[in-house]
Picture 1 (cartoon, chains in turn yellow, blue, purple, red):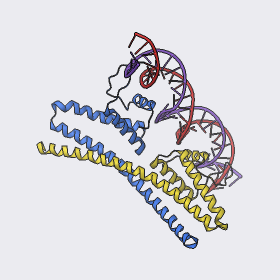
Picture 2 (picture 1 turned 90 degrees about the vertical axis):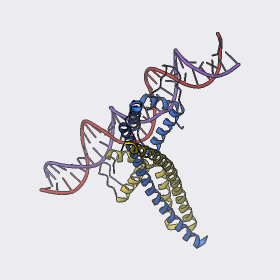
Picture 3 (picture 1 turned 60 degrees about the horizontal axis):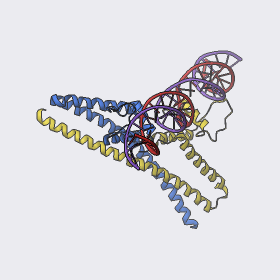
Picture 4 (picture 1 turned 180 degrees about the vertical axis):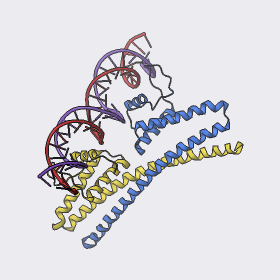
Length: 133
Length: 133
DNA sequence: TCTAACCTTTACGTTAACGAGAGATTTATA
DNA sequence: TATAAATCTCTCGTTAACGTAAAGGTTAGA
């Protein structure tokens, strides 16, 4: 995954990982596939969007709060509450989408400029080539 | 530009900025429009691509090396050397483009996943709405 | 059961990237 | 030319995000 064991332990210590793990102190850490996917996702957000661990933590906490609600209302759920939970999830996803798209636009702008630069260089190379190539 | 004065001085101290500035020690720093554009570009690369100051420095140094060559052969230029310089510039621009596009693809992947998530949430909201909304 | 290989905890170290403050200096302006 | 406001240099501090080393504990396999 491109990170060291120390990083994973640090993330756990920081509160990003292993929120629901039952483990005897001193025993080996065991991870489910879901845990792995979760970490991979966090690292992706960190690398792609440049969010800090602190921000990731808030994000994780918000997710856990929603998961908690889901559990609490799974049995007794009025569809009123279900709707609320789904809508919260939607808000969350849309916030992330907005972030991603903002960054995409900035990157697209950068890309356009680079392409232009490349075109100019190529054009100059062609005129040069016409002279003595 | 979203950075403090301290940051700018630090970048200079680090070797990113003010490479060709003639300034009496103690006097105020003066910046040309080109300087401003340069800094803005560096910050953009830092924020969008997440490159470290160390990497930015190497990038800057490569640019300066090419600029130096341009000067050295501006007078005496054989179009042989001109071609070489242009081709180096092309390599440089294409390397940056590759980086940008790699990141774009990663972001696009992330976006697709988020959109899917959103669709699922919306679908579930609709089925809910059909029941009692 | 014993061992080799790996893991855990704890504590301190490190590095990048600035922040903050003091005291001297510079510069625009009245 | 006097003065206020902004800058300069220098130095030490800080924070995030791990790295590293030591000492002991776990675990799978022979």
